[in-house]
Every structure is written in C-alpha cells, then in structure tokens.
Image (cartoon, rainbow, N blue to C red; front, side, top):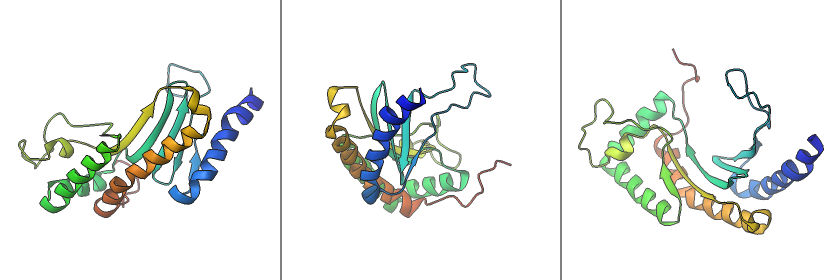
Length: 186
C-alpha cells in the first residue's frame, strides 16, 4: 500500500507543509511506522499523519484534524523556569492574559500532564495554582471529520489556529526557552 500512502496521504501533507513553511517554520513529517518493541499492539503503521511546523503540530486522521502547539513535556530546567515565571506577578499575570486571548480565539489551553496538588515550594492557594500544576503548556484545537477536510478549508483552519497560538509561543520563548539539559534522566 506504499503507493496509496505516498499519493493519497503523504503528498497532500507535503503540499500543505510547503505552503505553511514560510509563516510557521521548518516542517518535519513524522514517520508512518510505529515503534512496536514494547507494545502489545504490533500493528506496524500509524493511523494518522502528523508533522511539526516550527513549534506547532498538525495531525490528520480518521478522527479529523488537530492543530496547535506549545511545550508538551518540559525538561526539569524548563519546568523550573516555567513555574518561576507563572508564580511571578508580572510574567504570571501576563500569561493569564495570553491564555485568555488564546482561549477566546477558540483554542483549548491545557497540559498533557498535571500534578494533583501544588508543586513543592508553592502554596496550594496560589492565584495561578492551575497553571503551576501543569508540566507543560499547549494550545490546540481539533475538528471532527467533514467534507471540508479535503479542501482549502482545512488549511484555513490550521492557519487560524497556529496564528492564535503565537502569543503563547512568544510567552514560552521569553520565559521558558529551550532546555539546557541533554535529555537524559540521571
């Protein structure tokens, strides 16, 4: 089925990414093969096509379209800077405004992992405790499958969503930045 994948799945995604590159950054298409080494499910292929575009992420599957971005999983040094910035009156209140703006544009602001209580060293009644408990910060939107998915309407939705994430990306770049750790846990 490689011909079908190349023609009907990969080629349209490559074309879309080429159109988005100038505004959003360099794209990186995810491979179609699953890592089955530690999984009970040994099916070899993914059922979605996804790519990063700069700091953003786009995915198309039978479930529909997903677009957004942020910092899904922060390294310990990033998480420390994130929490310090959230706790600060100046940058923390600025983040609240950014989250309100991004949410108003129709995106969902969330984390893929959160603590159940306050992180160590922060009071449980902190005014931004919800943000402090997050271990990442993402803004995204998803759409159910529909006829527009194979039209220019899909690109319009992606562009609108990614433009709406820019204030969040700006805050994260200014207050968290890239990790200085090598990625290995010791």
